[in-house]
Image 1 (spheres, rainbow, N blue to C red):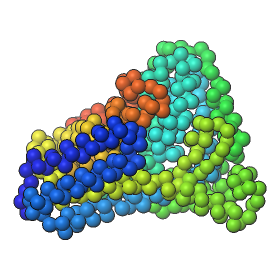
Image 2 (cartoon, one colour):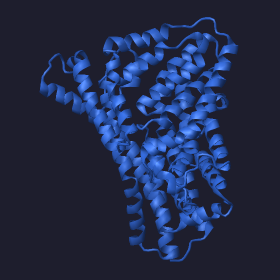
Image 3 (cartoon, helix red, strand yellow):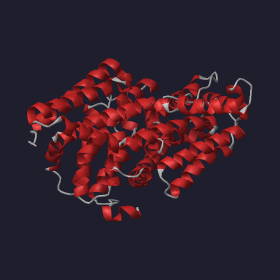
Image 4 (cartoon, one colour):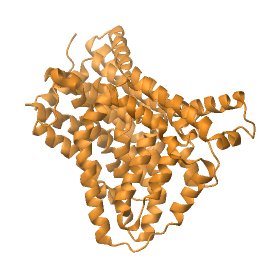
Length: 480
């Protein structure tokens, strides 16, 4: 097979980036709900045509590359679909509402900024979604911050820092599952390895937010918004610590290194049991007043595949809790599948290897390899305007290089998340930046300087890579 030139290898990338930019301009926040998937498939088509007509690569070879790429991500896509059911049942059981309820209760004027960051971390950890967190509880916290006299950019920075910390560390997060899948490492091994970079980043961020909050000296807190939220939660759910049983079970299973799929499945089953015991009033309301095995079964199945739905009379609560279900994950699965088709085509034609080799010529060791990974993720966030692509493409590009350097796959997955996931929100034309600016009502460039966690994550990752700290070799990966 003739080796492609760098020029022709870059044509599909330029073509794809052009389409993605057009999609963001035309479709804005809806770009990832279909247009980007079409762009990825068209990019794969262009790649395949160049490979076939220019370099004589058979379509059977290209198809084999696509099959290999999509099969590598199959487990992640299955987990994402099951996570949809987990989110729905955890809301039904009162687990997510209780986490939100107690998180809101601890907010006080003196530590509003760090506690806002922590509250968003809790919600995002529970839901696995930074976007849902900033678009719901984040809106309420922006209003409270304005009442206190805080700069809205500063408050948005605290909200986003917490939301992306939770998203990054949650086993329910699609990007967390995707990064692990791209590096071909275990989900919980990936999360554990991120502690070395994510832990210092969030601790430093909280310290900075605490110092800023204390120097602003807020004297009173507008508690109406918080009380309204907690009151609605209390009226619609039985808020009790017993609802923390499902996440506790999952945490215990994770601690015992049980694989993600059975751990999540048991998390769903335990949530169903908790809902039947502690949320009977809610179940009766959802069943129209009756309480029979058939009616309960119908509600549980519906919540599992279609998500939870409630009309509480409070817009923020409804937007926060009306989510989940397997259906809700299908768009993300579609996007991942389309991205893997594009990546598989690039790899099968040899174009991905040519691009990677060009970048890797500047790599002289582990530190520069990790730096190249981080830089590529940020570059793709700024050009491709999508955090999923910023994870998928570098993941495919650098996987072999990490193997060649005898580095455990969790080193790659951590670098992908340290730059690919968290920097998307800092770029105005990226889907992450556009979405958060829209829902929070704060311009991207106004909040970006205060997203300390998002800026610190890639910097700490680069530093640890350069210093060869917490870098795991393959021979030691099992002990990690």
